[in-house]
Amino acid sequence: NAGVTQTPKFQVLKTGQSMTLQCAQDMNHEYMSWYRQDPGMGLRLIHYSVGAGITDQGEVPNGYNVSRSTTEDFPLRLLSAAPSQTSVYFCASSYGQEGTEAFFGQGTRLTVV
Amino acid sequence: SQQGEEDPQALSIQEGENATMNCSYKTSINNLQWYRQNSGRGLVHLILIRSNEREKHSGRLRVTLDTSKKSSSLLITASRAADTASYFCATDPSGTYSGAGSYQLTFGKGTKLSVIP
Image 1 (tube, chains in turn orange, red):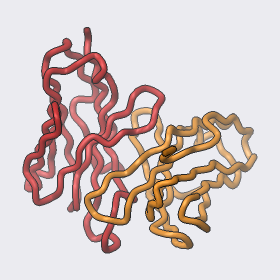
Image 2 (cartoon, rainbow over the protein chains, first blue to last red; image 1 turned 90 degrees about the horizontal axis):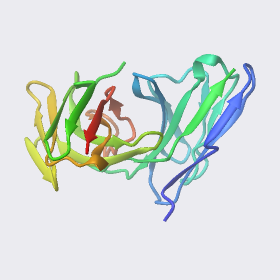
Image 3 (tube, chains in turn green, yellow; image 1 turned 120 degrees about the horizontal axis):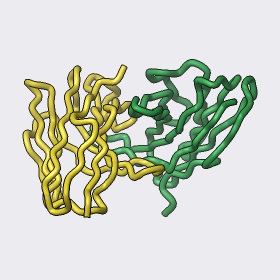
Image 4 (cartoon, rainbow over the protein chains, first blue to last red; image 1 turned 45 degrees about the horizontal axis):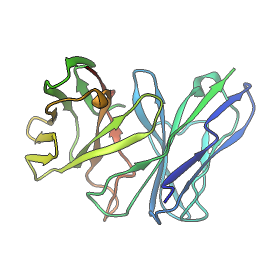
């Protein structure tokens, strides 16, 4: 049982480049989310999805795009990378029931130079 | 904006001692959760307390919730070196999609716990 899998684990981008961070879960969870973690800031919500075809913005959505075509996958796209997007990105999933916890992937450490 | 705020930011104790971390939040919640993060790793769920609960136990963990003060505390008893990690509180807001799960968590900045053998 793999849980939540994120790829890649590390990535270096040049300013202006685009890329997609992959997230897949095998627990048949309805809900999936992307967070970023910056030093001293805790985790902040970027985008989330409550089911296939349904996405919405979180606290810090600018510069990111998401889609959810299947229950299992929730990719995060950086449209034009900026140094301010240097961060550690975490994907999480959860059941669609109140009172259930989120399961997190191991993170993607992204550096934009 | 960050809703939860943990206190203290860092805590260093000897093995065998108890560790207490506090969390404050700002808005109405369905539940409050505590997560642990080992250095360079993902977050692992520890315990969840619902808004209508006041105290919850799980092994060496004890969580309290005071919704009137919008605060929670996490107590780790008889700490071990393996408890060394960062601990985050996360709130699951009320008024979200019906049957809401933990897709819209708001995290605090965390408490970095060091347990010295």
